[in-house]
Image (cartoon, rainbow, N blue to C red):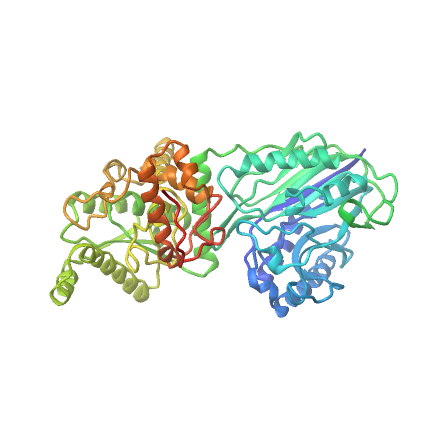
Length: 584
């Protein structure tokens, strides 16, 4: 057996910030080298950020990525790290792909490289390209066709990129055929609730199939609507967990491994799925035997509410910081949605950067106004009151609106007020709508849909209540003031646009509504299947019709953090003009 100390960098990167990402790699390599690492790895497309979307089709961006990679290799050598292999993801292109119809121009590839000796010692591209959910990699990339293996200190290390693990065949059986002692997979795997256990079982299964230890290094942070939760995992050949990083935290996993020593050079030629073996020897001599220091550890798994809340905080923080914003603005109604959004914002960027505005109308209850002020007191966010009654009266004297038009006018006046303050003071507005409301169109265009980001856009109303209770309980357990007023949680939800209004005047009970929506939206179940699950046919017909006819509203809603298998975004694309209806 041979020893190897690996450094797996579970860190964030920013799309397009090639210089900043390169600096982060260099900084982490310095840390890993000081800790005595023999092999250092970074996440998928670390140099460019992920996903780059149509930037992959821009030749200048691909060229900048490739140039930065070569410069990074030289920079590492100049700083004395030339003998330390570094595996890093970047955007590259195929050197031999022939242009053809249906293939992305320039043949870009989702690549990784092994940097050693001041040069790029080995390049390879992702073999399996995902084309489901939020992924469009067939649109952007051509697949890799090699089986990359590098020998490091007498150990053969097979290499893979993210989807290469999720699909059968390819580099996993290829690692077994190559006789690798370690399979190293670099990843940018987006967060979804309940994905954690699926990921662990996958890593265990692939290690057993490859017949060797498996190191899965993952990205953390946020990019637009996506969140990356980390959860870097290392298992041995039997699938036993050796080390596991935390979620939503940047960290370097240092681990001493005992691995089978390489016994020969893998034969050139084709392996699993027709991949061509590419074997590069970096260092033959094993490490002198040493006493292991980094023997691994497992971070405590987060509970369901903690995990979701962590994702929402991470997503908002990344959106604000990476886009160069300084502060956020929230309309505080005293209700549960805006209260939860405010709590998330305070946790994400600090209460000193959060501004709340109460905008009461003639129909706003005293308790709602009090609840908004109490939220501000508890969290320490900036707070002001701007009554909309005078504006409302001025509009009504000119337009004489009634019914729903009158109700929506109040919401739109609040939207105009928020955008005016936003323009004047430089805050971005956060939209407080939840997934239940967006699904059925219970949202006013250019009113409560106004904003640059929707932190709870992918959170059903029942989960909003769960998260609010959890956040308060966490605060109490730490001896802190719970941020959300109990009255905001306990009172029936209401838009307060007419006397005595509650949400159930227009919608089914949220517990029932959300269960129907999860089947229809998240799982793509049809009318008959939902009814067979025990729901009233008339209610199902109503909910499905509301959902189908609200597509035009959802298209105009701002982006927001994705936490479910299917959010209202890139992973659920339905036509606006559509006469197909589920139902009796």
